[in-house]
Amino acid sequence: MGIDPSEILRRRGLRVTPQRLAVLRAVSDQPHVTADVVAQTVGGEIGSISVQAVYDALAALTETGLLRRIQPAGSPARYEARVGDNHHHLICRVCERTVDVDCVVGDPPCLTADEDFGFEIDEAEVIFWGRCPDCVRETKGTA
Ligand SMILES: [Zn+2]
Ligand SMILES: [Zn+2]
Ligand SMILES: [Zn+2]
Image 1: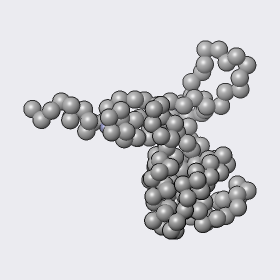
Image 2: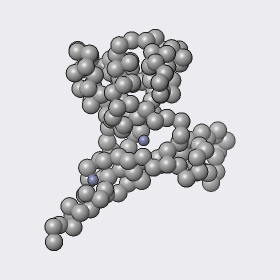
Image 3: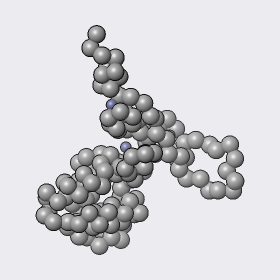
């Protein structure tokens, strides 16, 4: 860090707006956050911002590689500012707690498809689904 966030946006060719800066900050502060929570955080910070403006900012930041979008099956997309290291996620099926796990291999894609059908593959998105320790304890009861 230590780099001015405005400078980060400019380097990616993005126009610097208070909305984009606030969205970038909100996601940096709360990894794996949903767009709704970003909207709440940013709204509380810079005042009225439409949900559409939040989505637009998230899209611009994701397209330029400043944010990463994770789309777990059956739940809303999450955003994070930890990009470019090809890490993966553990997600609890019960409480949706999301945890980063480092990639074993390090280079994307970390898995080799049996057959690439001529595609130039650059990513394998891995999500480990299960139950977090708290939820496991919960279902085991207090015995
Ligand atoms: Zn859980
Ligand atoms: Zn992550
Ligand atoms: Zn990996």
